[in-house]
Image (cartoon, rainbow, N blue to C red; front, side, top):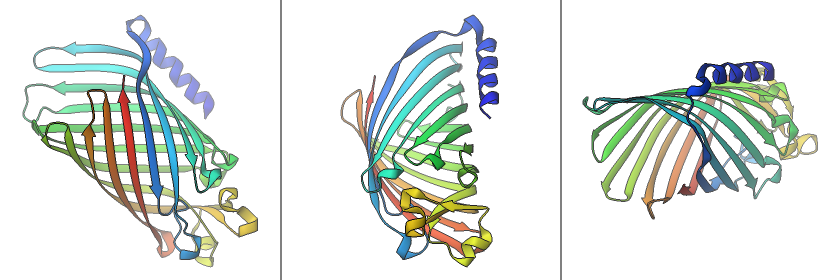
Length: 289
């Protein structure tokens, strides 16, 4: 996997060549508090425990290039990176660091109705977890269309595919997410957000193994983050569908600082009539540079 990632990155740099406009620098810093009702993604009450985490993230711009800029259309490409660090206050073994580099392209129609903004991106990342079995390389591809019919409302429709190549089979996963999001800003500096997501593919949960889990799981392994063999807690990989609903709001504290509050509800149905619900609350303070 790593050989193909390196080759792909080399081809990208060769294609862009000297036309790339270098713009290396930090573009943003986020600080996020996360409350999670069910980090194990477990079905039975005995396996469910809530926790909270603090996450810091830094976004980088490596280069950007304007391809088209006319009165009717705009287009460009970019290469960016990010690094995030998460400390889990309730379950320390769920702490992790993520690193990603991504290529993006956009095409904007400035004079058409709803001003369609089409974007495409692809990236490669690495997850470094406190529990070795979660470490791995993550490849992702995303495409979306944003429409802004009015100055105070916009909506985005898109799809994202992700493949994870982990240290152990149980954390190898592939999933596709279809999403629809909206932003409504009735007054200056305030925005209300909503979103719907539908995820198909692999899900990874941790629970006390039941006969139903054993019969339907694609892979299963003791999970040290939740006590492992000593606590009879096992991570398992299973085919599943998830429905996610989001509701939140954002406030512009200053031209460079924004505060966001988001509530997310997750309902997952897996093979063998296995399922779980999960609720997350995220409070994010963002600084744009």
